[in-house]
Length: 354
Image (tube, rainbow, N blue to C red; front, side, top):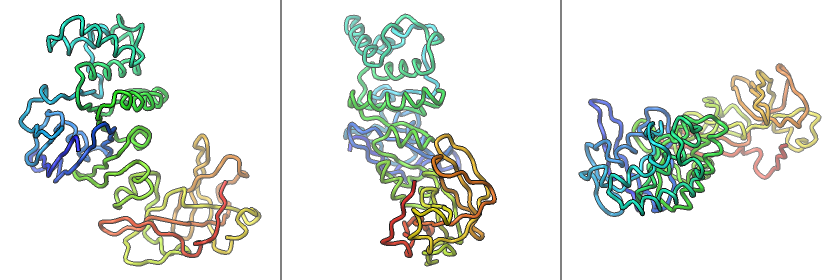
């Protein structure tokens, strides 16, 4: 592993920001630290950078313990949430600043800055000041400046937080492409699930100072290992009486998480569902919300409120309308783990959705 955190504890008085953190990150990977506010993700990033000191445990980068090494000596590039660009310096001067501090020869500075300007798509903006740039351009400058000294590790603290939605979506793809092109090991903090899933090779989910799960985005989404991850990832309904739904038994679980894609609703005249209508139950539409490319539909089945998505191509529906409802899988959970359960009555039967 290129970056390792071993048995890390970090306390702020009686508050435990990091509780026995153990992480291993491979060289060249782009990793997201994902979690709600106060979950400890930024504390982890700042300890790796050397901006915070752990109370216990070891931080290892490229085989070397760096706990007692100054931030400037760790070979790390840091991109801050607010860019932290020098207002009275041009783009060129911002990129050159770190190299000048290291007393790199002027010819090499010029070559390196020119290389980074070309790489990050900033050509033609060299003489502009930060207030003459868009948010996306400022972020590119901050990224290029962090890369200027050729760091061995890049850390990014919520890099897209200050950018509007459309530009943020464009920058996600750009950042992923740039980091893989440069080949630098990178860790970024985010509370945005979509951001983590779209950009990261691997996701580390944090909660209350602890690590909940470490896996690829697909693995995290399809196989959440804990109740927190099952509820946090995706859009979910938390249901205690899930065993009242057809095809599920109570077992020893405390409750269940049901995602919209696990729920299907239809009318009796929809022939696509004729083979499974006998396994459905009655529901009634309580709310309908337009979500751009689909409808979000809330359905009441007995005492259970479920959410599903409906294509705009399907026939119109309205609040109060009665529907047939099928829940074909869910995540049941106990105190420690989440378990994927399939609807036993539907095993071997095909459900065609559209």
